[in-house]
Length: 329
Image (cartoon, rainbow, N blue to C red; front, side):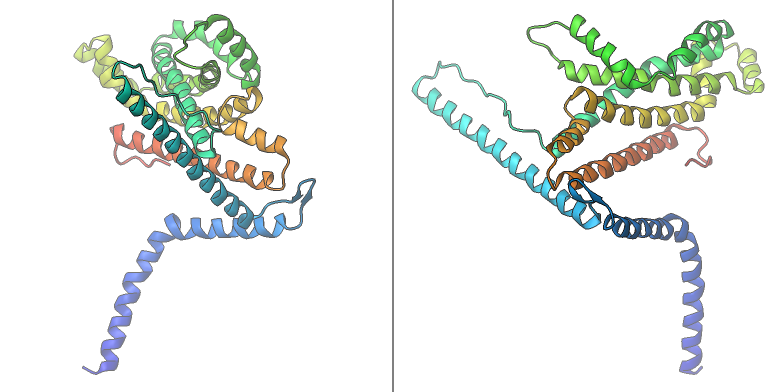
């Protein structure tokens, strides 16, 4: 066999392997990359033509530079905190050396919160409110889905409170927390409770409504199986109701998580509670030439975190779903 024929066969084999691989990767990898590159290009071109009171609207390069600056500021602040605690430890060690019975304590570092510490604060607050809402919405949704009488009693309240804006809840929650949560040594800060409860009030409704729909839509065949086997109410819920309604419950959870994350940023901006919302508002009030770029960094981070939370919830759904062949997006 000639070298030309061997080369031809190798080329055909490579084509047969590469083309199917490209077709498989295109929807999952190549097309998203193309979409991101087109977005960055359009952003770069349009940003250069927009003038604001603080200068040119930031493009991708300026935003990337400010992100690096925020990383450097976080590292520097962490070094300051480490040095602060190290000084206290040396001082306390010297004090104990002179007097073993002396009382020493470590004072917390009270430096300015960095961008990344505010991300952690917002995530903790959002997940607390989301968890609180889920613990209320899922059991209540199951009860309302199984009982038409409970649904008739709860539905008017659901329809009245479901469309209420989080900005309407925030002043009421703030006043209630201030009036009811009175302590000389509070375990949780009032700002945290205010934001978490506001998030919970807005996360409640998507999960509740979707749980009711999922439970009330269980096929009659499954209901008949439960009756034939004479399952107890709790066993019926555990073996029949939850597996059958899981897709709708998780749809509600994903909607609630996205809603809660959006609500939290608005609540932090309005109430000036610690977190990403306050970071954005402080940068807006600062009005420096770097403020717009830093706000864009925060906007992109908020979007990326929201996307990551949705993917995480989707992964949990795949893990607990009984139908592993179902297509989840």
